[in-house]
Length: 176
Image 1 (cartoon, rainbow, N blue to C red):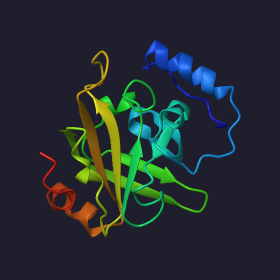
Image 2: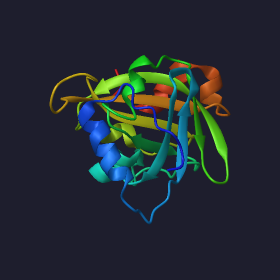
Image 3: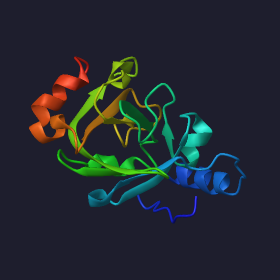
């Protein structure tokens, strides 16, 4: 992965699993890097959202637009490891998504809690949208009953410049 990972907020089980997975050899390199400077989050993004991928870093949800492409890009992460800092995210925070060929800034326009069945939050969009998905609540023991959805709009989008009300119209009825 080539970068230092801050595990300060992580659960002990996730730290142990990350240390174990870090010793493994993988043929698939990171496809992008996600950074949210205000909350100190920086993590590699890998293809897929299976358990092994999320133990290594963040996972690109394959049914969504690829990082750096137009459309709705879905990124998943564990609430007790890489995505733990999302608990401190606020509206208008900036998210940087870097691929080998480009860098794009997104602006957080909504944060909602949905049930795991509300997958419409990952529906395609015509504008460049970043949807972060993690289990919720952050500190609940065992399996989490809900998902926190962070919706961010590319800063070069007319919706980002127009503000949250326009961005909400992109996000569908599942966001409350």
